[in-house]
Each structure stands twice: as C-alpha cells, then as structure tokens.
Length: 269
Image (cartoon, rainbow, N blue to C red; front, side, top):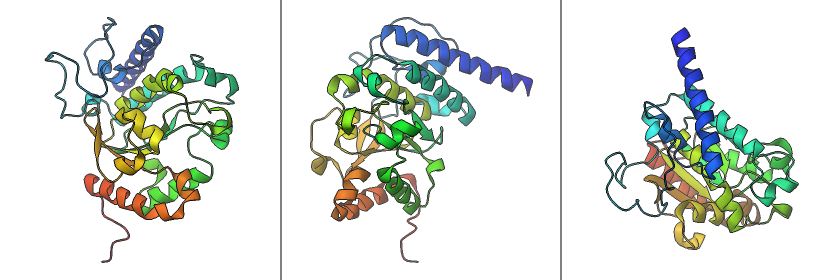
C-alpha cells in the first residue's frame, strides 16, 4: 500500500513538474505521453501537427492509424485523476489570453477521468462560469438527458470545453483564444484517452479536426483526432432552439454507441 501511495505521489509530482515546464514554453502538448516514459526529460520539442503526422518516421511515435493517447494503457484511473488535478491547477492560474479578465471561475472538466467517451463543447456560459463546472445550465441539462438516453450517466463520461473561461456575452471564442487554450484540451484528452469523442457544435468540431467545414457536412460520420474517432454533432444549445435537430443528433449518438459496443436502450426487444 505504501508503495502504491509513493507511486501515485511520484506521478502527480511528475505531472506538475512537466506542466510547469510546458507552461514556460507556452505549450501543453505531450504531457501525458511523457508520463508513460520511465523518466521525464524536459527537452524542448516542436508541437505535433494535428492534421497530419510530423514529417519523417520516428520509432517512438505511433502510426497515424493508432490512437495518440498511448498513456491509456499505462495510467490507472486514480493516476489520471491526479494528472487532471495538476492540469486543472494550471488552468486556474492561467492569464495568457483576454478571457481571464471577465471570468468568475475557470471551467476545467468533469466526469470519469478514464471515461471511454468524451464530450467536448465550445466554452462556458453564465451558469458554468458561476459554478466552475461545464454544462450545468439549460444546455447541460439537455446533455445529461442525452447521456442518459445512451444508457449512461454523467459520471461515466468525461465532459469539457475548448476554452476554459467564459467568452463575453457567450460569444464564440476567437481563434487566438482557442489557440492559447488548445494545449489544455489536448492535455485533457491525452490523459483521459477516450475511445470516442463527441464534438458538440461547429466550434469544437473545427478545433479538434482543424477544418472549416460546416456542421451539416461533418455530422453523421466519424472523423479522427490523433487516431481517436470523433463524431461531430449539434450542440445541445442548438437543440433547445431547433427541436427538429434532435433526431439527427440521436442518430449520431447511436453510431457512437455502436462504436463503443453499447446496447441501444430504446431499441425494441
């Protein structure tokens, strides 16, 4: 038991030290992957391209067809929770873009630190800014119902946003704001290492997939983020204004369930 506690403490310290070093460089990519190595060797490396593998074969990198979050097989759930807490501390102290000026609280992420399924939204709204938790307003209540319709609970999945501070008047995050916050999202996804990601809304889909395509063209089919299947679909807030979009969203979620091998609770028996 003492050895396990020492191991967890060591991992948490490694995460904290690595993130602090990455912060100094202005990048958070590769935090979890570094934890999978036997030792942390903080040597500056170029951030990986999101749309294509880096040029030139490297023995230590996984092929493009394999999931990039290789830490999934290395870290147990408690270790991932510790890594997420360390990253959350960095988010709370971040003042690298203008969004920090109007925030009440940073909004990191919530749910299962080893969840097979991750939902990524755009950014916090008023309710989220006040509580410091993603998707707790009207759109969040609808998301909870969507998750329950899949036969799951919020505690079974991981939920986060592209940006961690509320944009003024709930506007769409600006490109430089998303770029500044991108490393936090990348770190979250690398630590949680989900098997499938649901990108809710065009902002999340475009950030993850690095595309300018419209949601109407993206949804309904799986895409990839570093080898992880991504299903873009409409944001719950959009569904509150457009009830007719609920059917195609449910179709998207059924494809996600099939990909994960989950039974459809609504299917006739």
